[in-house]
Image 1 (tube, helix red, strand yellow):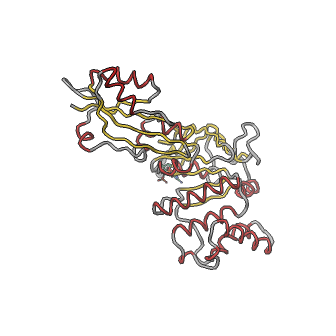
Image 2: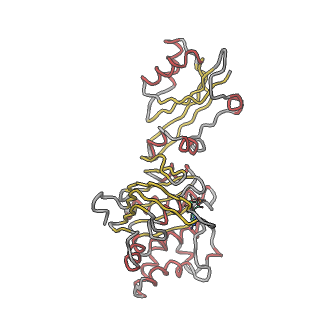
Image 3: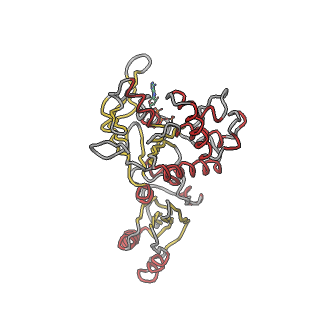
Length: 353
Ligand SMILES: Nc1ncnc2c1ncn2[C@@H]1O[C@H](COP(=O)(O)OP(=O)(O)OP(=O)(O)O)[C@@H](O)[C@H]1O
């Protein structure tokens, strides 16, 4: 696979900035100081809220947008510096799938999949064989001659995937590809993406506003906020030890543990006067046994622990869990120190009386 010869990455963003002219004068800063390496064969998720800059970032990889500053290098080529011929080459190496599929309604499934090959001037018999392969890969043999209006959302996205793979790209960009799908169909499309990543060694860069998508498929994640990357790393590390408040807020929707309402209603940020309980989140990774530790805090240290909620999650094959507990605020320093000594990560969520 051709990669950035200096870093070995499939996609490199080096100090990338992008501004758009604002209506009525001035500029909108969409991205600033973006540096990110996407390693070949990985699935990297870019997560952020609406307007964070995700689409702009993705569109720079196939030259639909050019950086205002910095460099985007894809498969060894500087996208911003590429002319028309260079961009055509880059776009053959970079497929893309979309939230609303972007299929041509007047073309059948097979004709939609064939389109990039027709544009590339591929000979007709070759197109036919390649389209058959692609349709089989996405499991749509029975729908070959159907029109998009006759397909479900999940089937339409399969056509989108087949079309994106037509020119044998090295990189696949996914722009909120499952956001218009129900949860079950989302899972089947994510599984298809994971399969092609594994079978074809394709590098996938996906943007999403759902942490569940990142958890289910991405090996790496970058969190973007206000045009900047605020946190990035291996998905497992970011999920088990998030640092930035934006990451924590995205994670609260997927860690499977929600605070009981009666606690959430009373929770305050600073410790109130008088007797109070400190509310803690414990994140435990791998096979660490947390419950015996909590029991030992009671017997050995006389610290009584209230367990408020808990859940175990998986990222790939690796389990991690979250437990919400409360302890007497006067003994909370000792409790946190004890848990820290036993490699349990704790975070203070607040206080209740
Ligand atoms: N062509 C454009 N002209 C002017 N401003 C733009 C343009 N494209 C994007 N922007 C601005 O750049 C910022 C980032 O937009 P972008 O679409 O990349 O965000 P996003 O994270 O993809 O959001 P969403 O999830 O809503 O699509 C926003 O402030 C947006 O208004």
